[in-house]
Amino acid sequence: MSTGQPRQTYKKTDVRELAVFGGIPLFTAPLHVGRPNIPNRKNLIARFNDMLDRRWLTNNGAYTVDFERQVALIAGTKHCVAVSNATIGLQLLVRALGWKGEVIVPSFTFVASAHALLWEGVTPMFADIGEQGYCIDPESVEALVTPRTTGILPVHLFGELCDFDALDAIARRHNLTVVYDAAHALGCTHRQRPIGGYGSAAVFSFHATKFLNSFEGGAIVTDRDDIAEQLRLMRNFGFSAEDTVESLGINAKMSEVSAAMGLTSIEEMDQFIAINRAHYNQYRSELNALPGLTLAPRPEKDRRNFQYVVLDVDPSVAGISRDDLHLLLNAEGVHVRRYFYPGCHRVEPYRSMFPNAPERLARTETAAARLLCLPTGSGISSPEISRLCELFRFIFANVESIDASLHQAKAGVARR
Image (cartoon, rainbow, N blue to C red; front, top):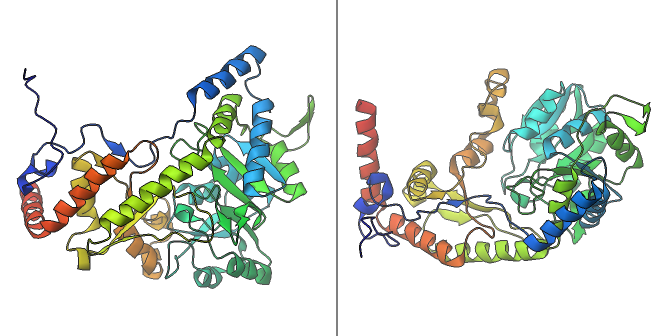
């Protein structure tokens, strides 16, 4: 018996069936980039019950201590200091390292990398990304060093790793400290070595959108005893004992409920990575023949978490822009993301601070106009990826008529 509801269409056969032109969306239950991975619920709830029975909900409880131990093992470092989120982790490091004046950071990153600096009174100086990949360009970094520079904050973007050797050499030449924003890089290795021990420290994110999450949270890893000691004081108002405050501090502690989620997620970390890798390989196989589309490569010798499936759209070859693809896919219930559009230098307050920045950030400008991140993780299935890739193939087979229809629709909106 008919319910009166239109049937979900899984295969488009005519351009007029595209949702952007009034057709039925391909996915009535939307697909998302960064939809949270959920670990074993039984194990998670057991930890919650234990935590509630012990009535220890925060303030460096057993789960937080164990979480720090596990993350330090993954990162290959002596110390891990768990915090409420990665942004405040960066802010604590700015103070712990005494950064002032200017710190060099890529513009092609999530805005929190820059905000953490400026919030602490440090001016972010935006470097370009390299010719290959999307991480900070060491030559661009060196060109920005001035007497006011006190540090470098490179970002391991999309789990791709920065050029450690070149950046550390620059730091030594100019007596600078390096902190790696490793929000995307948990579990990654460089020359078979975990990446936590490079630089003075690194910061991981365990936000819900990361492949391994603690609901919300972050962690600072380091091999330096002095930094770890400072951070532990600073995250807890400066307390060193029950009634002893030794320094200025703030509340940046991770709660036990977040640590419990983090520990339960760590137990399934390898499974989450395996799912991500399988999804990446499926996308690569099914989209390989489409002109102008390139998936960011992943190394064979070192470990990556495959957290992001990053698609480069070359409009001169594809015949369609990244932004038009974004429009078409979102209408179909595929919430792809234009990470990291438009670049930190083009949002406030940095746009006003550095009005001429686009002139010296050419590769950042290109990447911000071309990259698209696709859904992955345990929240999407292999058959859903197949349907999504079929949609890509339909779009590319009809790109000229789609482009003409989009142009006509946009012209009509402009006239109104």
